[in-house]
Length: 523
Image (tube, rainbow, N blue to C red; front, side):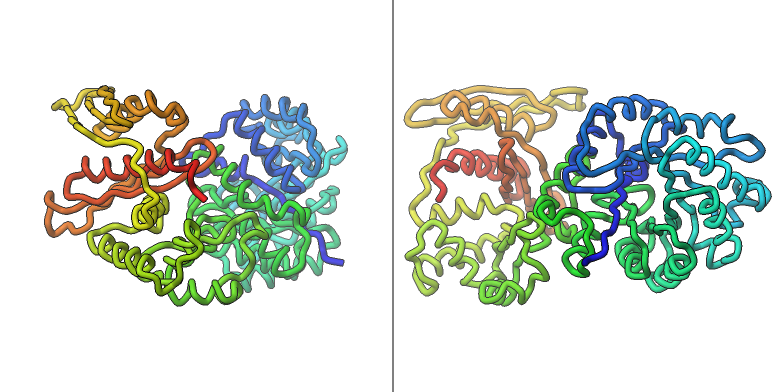
C-alpha cells in the first residue's frame, strides 16, 4: 500500500506575499473550491492577525461544503513576556474559527536573540504556551519551525529543542521550514531524516525556491520520511517563490508511488493550474513542468519524428495523465512529417511526398526567413495551410484604413481608427477611438464586422507582443507582432511581420478574426 502524503497548500497565505498578488475574498473562496476538488488535505487561508479582512473570509468559507480539505489559520507564537490568552494575534487565530491552526515559531537561535531580542528559554516557552493554548481549545495544531534547516546547521541542539517544546505541548504535526530557500537536497534529506527518526509525530517540509531547488528539496524531504508537503499550487510567493505543488504532486504520485490526491483528480491538474493562475492574475509559465503549455511541445524534426513513432522517446509521461496535451510546433526545423500531420487534419489523403506538402514547407521556410515564427501562432499557420489547399475563403476585404493620433499624448482614448471593409459585396465604414493605435484598430474592425458577424462580439485580445527583429536597422527594423485572442471557450495565437508596426498589427489582427470566422468549417 502506497504511503499517503498530506498536501498542505499555502497559496492564499504564503503565495499572497508574492509581488503583484492581491486576492479578493471571492478570489480566495474560488481557489479554496478548486484546491478542495483536487483533493488537497489542508488549505492555509491567511493570517487574521496581520490582515483583519481575512476574518471575513474565514466567516464566509464556513458556508462552503468541503469534500477533502480542512481550512487552517496561520499565525505566530505569543509575543515574549505575555500570556498566550492575552496576545491579540493569538486570539485572532481563535476568532478565525478554523479546525486547524498553524503556529510558526523561531527555531534558529540567531533569529531568537537578534530578531526577537528574546532569551532562548523564553522562545521555547512561547512555542509551548501557544501550542498548548490551542490544543486546550480543541484545535488541530501544526507547528511551523521557521528557519529550521539553517537553525539546525548552526545549532542542532537548540533547533531540536524548539520541536520538542511543540511536541510536548501536544502539537499534531511538525513542519520543518527551509525559509531562506538556500539549502541543497541532500542537506534537506539528512536533516529531515534525523528529525523523522527522533519524533513519532508526522513531519512536514516547507521549502522556498531561492536556490531553484524547492521542488527537489520537497521530494527529498518526503523520501527522508516526511508525511506532509507544504507549498503553493503554482509556485509563486515572496522573493523567488515557494515549492510548486503542481510539480511536486505528479512527481511524488506518478513517479514515486506516493498518494497525494485521488488518482481520478490527477487529470484535472492542468485545468486547475490555469484556473488558479487566472484568479491570481498571473500568467502560467509555458515551460511549467507537467501543466505548462509547452510541457509536451515538440519542435525539432527528429524529436517530432521520434515522438510519432514512440511517445516515450521524448515524453516522460502521457500528457493526458495530468490533463495536458501534446503540441507539435510548426517551424522550419520541424520537418516534413510535422507539416504533413497538420495538412492531414484537413485532407487525410495527402502524402508526405505530395507537391502540396512540399509547397507548404517551402512557403513556411520563406515566411520564417522574413521573420515569421508560428510556434505561438498556430491559428495563422492553419490559415496558411487552408490557403495552400484552396480551402480558404476570405470573410472580409479591407478597402481602406486610416489611423489618427494626437501629440502630445493625452490621457484616455486619444487615437482614432477609421476603417472600410466589404463583405459579400456590401461595404461598411466605421470608426472607433482607442488607447493606442492597435486598440483603436481592433475596436473599429470588430465594430464594422459585427454588422455581418454577430459572433465576433465574444472575441477579445488577451495578449499583444512586439519584437524588433534586427535592431541594426534602428527605426527601419521589421517587427514581429504576436496577438493572442479568446472567445471565452478557446484561445488562439496569430502573427504579423512588417517594418510598419501598424501593418504588422493589422496582419495579426486580421488573421485572428479570420480564424474565428473559419472556426465552424474546421475539421
